[in-house]
Image 1 (cartoon, rainbow, N blue to C red):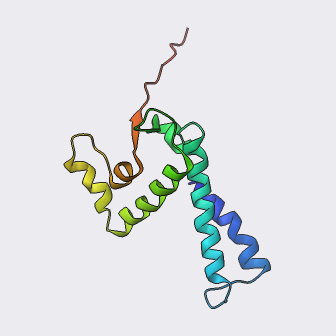
Image 2: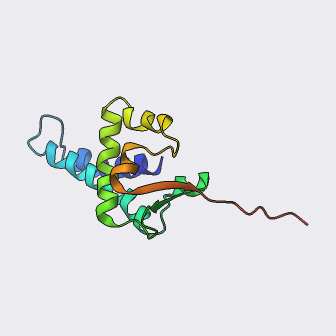
Amino acid sequence: MLVLSLIFVASIPVTVIFRITTASPWYDLYRGGLFLLCFLYYAWFWTHGGQTLGMKTWGLRLVSTRGSGVSWPQAMLRFVVAIVSWLALGAGFLWSLLREDRATWHDLLSDSRLVFERRIRHASA
């Protein structure tokens, strides 16, 4: 939801002030900017702690299979291959159902994995 909000806010000046529409010669630049915005959102969180806000909610963390944090090149590869996974009608995600380790295409190609974090529940006094 946060990414959709970012796209919406970024689109306001483009559509209202500059009046860029699908017929505009600047439309492809606008779409590329939205793609870059989405990449920067995910890559920033993945490379700085391994969690987007949604991942924190679900107790998930992205880690490198090398034992370190995820690098920017890994984040870029993961982002692009995840899009390919969706464009292939979700095949890259469904692939995880056939694997014991539940790795998706973007996990395998970017040498990264999603792991569940244990949550410590604090008892109320």
